[in-house]
Image 1 (tube, one colour):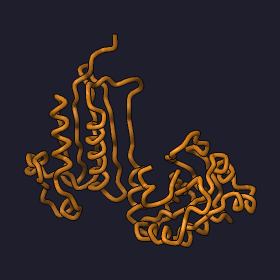
Image 2: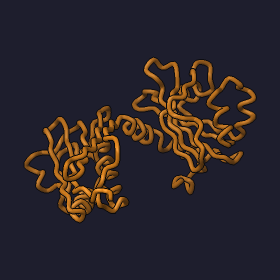
Image 3: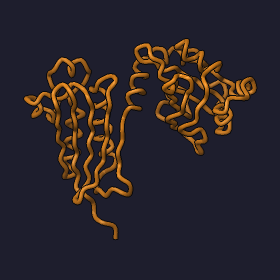
Image 4: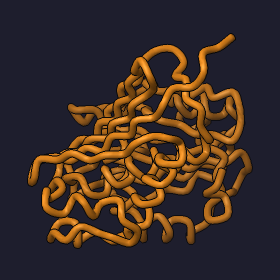
Length: 268
């Protein structure tokens, strides 16, 4: 995985504390291997666990011998499953936003003794921003129709468009807000909508949205770093695909970007 030059990692997992604060529930995993056995929905009680102490202390913990750790905690179902995946080392890092404990991100490796003290220092340096990004990402609501969507396109270029629009929605949306990603099948193509609640887009400035190096001039938007290149690049990619990108907004409430793409040929 792309994080490996910075941090030893064959597996990244994200778990969130449930609403009553008593359990940690797995929500996401990305690995550099197959099969993945510890799946979404796997839950562990926090009371009396080492993860409860990790979350309470706000400090990552190095586990460089997972087999030895499991021998001391035979009731840990998730540890047993990770060993079956071949994981030998783990670095659980607490996720907290504005003093709220929201979960744990687990960096894991199939080699023993993969982590060192400098990895803890790295995680502490980025902890708040990482927690905000993870929590926001989980609040993304997705609606995608069943079945194939036919579009004649360069998938790598369209991935750039989708990532840029979602990243902007997370970046400029409210801290505790929602991002909605909707894909709609139309008779003559496909529509992608990315919506977020937040400061919105001033109507008198929207004509500048898709200009190269242009940024809207509002206090909320100026507070976020940006170059204005990403949105222009996305608009240009959509244009090259024969599509259209547009924006709608209610000032001070929400913003939505829409991409309309022509459909591809029907299968023979």
